[in-house]
Length: 315
Image (tube, rainbow, N blue to C red; front, top):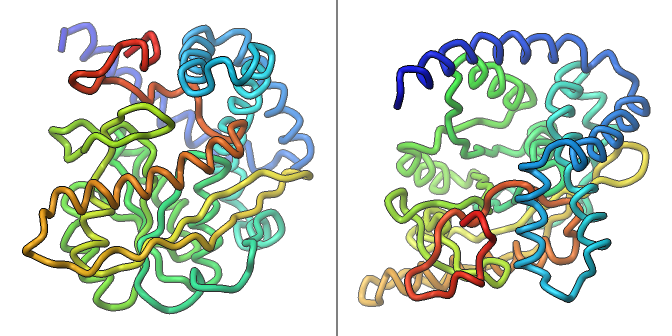
């Protein structure tokens, strides 16, 4: 890293910390309807003024949907997606005050009963769609013992404040690095753990190549590996924004991993199970594309032996 970049990063951290603290004070004071209106406007503005996000988002939409959607439809999806993501980020701060009252009023599980709410070991899978952060907050309020796996941010002060907000209703945040033993112990005690599993994970970090939205993509094999080795069922939870600034969290789809057999090819079993997981996530995204984070570089690397035309231009 160049000296200039080191200096810029060092100067950026205190600005990020101050901005985070300011948002924690100011955003919760904004009335809900006004906040939703402001964010909707911000989503549209981001489309027109944030060239990089617009370029990445349209490139992703082009390779996933091709000619099945028009340019106008893709533009509408991306604008809504940018607004949805902005709302989720703003809601991190808005729900930091009067948390119990606000979460109960603006987030609802559909259905409100079923396997997700039972006291048993489960590996919960979600994605960057809708408000994934609220799923953990409401689960904590309902008394569910959930540990969410999170990457450590580069700014330690922001990371500490963010995790404090995430844990205030009872969920536990576990750092992704070195989490294996912690999660195995949780499953043995009939507790739950949650992963957000739609990010590019390099092979060096434990990623394996599977099909994601029709594109060969390296994703983390950790959830499938854990589920298979411990016999823990996999259940999905996805959040959808609805009218009035509210959300619905949908649960219910379950994958039961095969019984562990040390004589089997472990890599093949984990790969097949990971593919099943990504198929469910892909279906969710295709059914509700306007809620997914299209502006992120989801395909940073190209699988060996594949055609470049399969991937966005930035790959």
